[in-house]
Length: 603
Image (tube, rainbow, N blue to C red):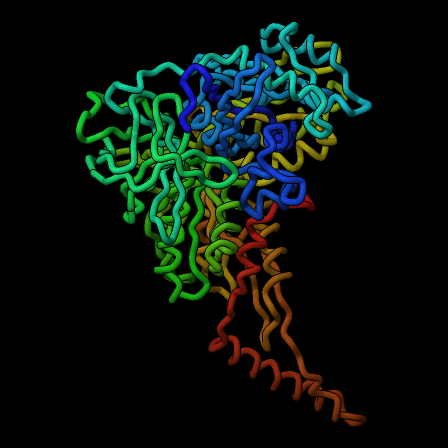
């Protein structure tokens, strides 16, 4: 049963991390009686185990809700729940493109935060109708008047339009749903025009092939229609079309304004691109819809299978992940220590962790990751400048005229009592303060220009711990600045391990080298001979740890007599250890590679 276009509302929920987006989506599903009490669990739309465990949203999820409004009419609400973490801002931008309105969710006790601002600007860029909603009104620390002032002062939105709710208890959710119907405009578009549908996501089903998530802007798509993907001209026949309820519900047709899915027997994963426009072959649209801005990865790491026979399985798994995570990019790579693998680009360290967990859980793969790196700009003495993200390709120091590293503009909003500690942290990370703005008597916004490489490892964790979770952080990449870059090699038993090489700022090399050597000493099992672990820059060593040998007490049978007898036995043992070291081979366990990735707790 198709709903008339003026009864359709497309909206998304955007907010800072942990302000209650998924909980509000749960209440919407309950109000629409789409889920029974028996089947209900928290975070209904977060389908991945990782999302449930970590309590975060990684993938934006779409669902269609039928709602009986106060005016007695039934409306079709198409909701897209989005992630809040800064690494997944690209998911948010895709969701926003498919909507006419957005609920901007703000925590009643924490107020407006950095990610709230950046998400609001994203929504404004697409001319969305923004409805400010203050959540967590059930908390004793909720301060509605203060948050309303922030909405008026920081966001420039009408504070009289604010809906106070509690997504946990359901307080005010009915009023909000009626507000959605009233304030968000119905979608434009002519159901009889040539078809223009935007692909905003897709996923892979082993039996049905690629399932494409689309928002239809113009025209009507029916089962049996021949469709064309406008980016590559590939043509397919629609086998099934429908809406997203909690499960996919076949309707046979999707017309302008609808958010739904189509299945067209597409088995070749690489042909479907997020941001592509789909049209019908019979009456093709003249031009594609504007897609999404190309996302640029900022963190690079290589992924290798522990068992080299799993290389093809890893290739297939990354292909399938790429299908519903358009921000993942990869190319083939190889390493002397780890064999064949893939060099991948990620949007941040959390994105890297999530991809690693998904490869291990969803595809049952055992993988090793190399140290994450950012993309540097190298200007050689001779030849053209180029970009470099892999330490293995770092040229000889004498051939480089200059090296540049990416810088970001970081915006941090914090309560004033944590300001001193946060400024100290930013200075440790080579940050340069560019702006400081008191939002009110209790909160301040500071802006820093700082190297992206410094933010990668543990900046976010340290910021949260020194501000007790109250400071919020958002950043955008702003360009490149000159740096003193060196390649640091890690040698185990005098053999360089290429997978552990890193590109580092010269002044940080010694500290980073010490930290890595310490961690490797804890992870590498002891052998019958001494194992030196060294960090080297060119020909000079900057850090060293030694794993002592397993020794048998050869002097146990020497009792009494001259000391020279004991010395003779120890010398004999020493010679044996020396010979053993020459032929000995040190196997690095997977945990050794992973330990290098972890944040430095002791520094």
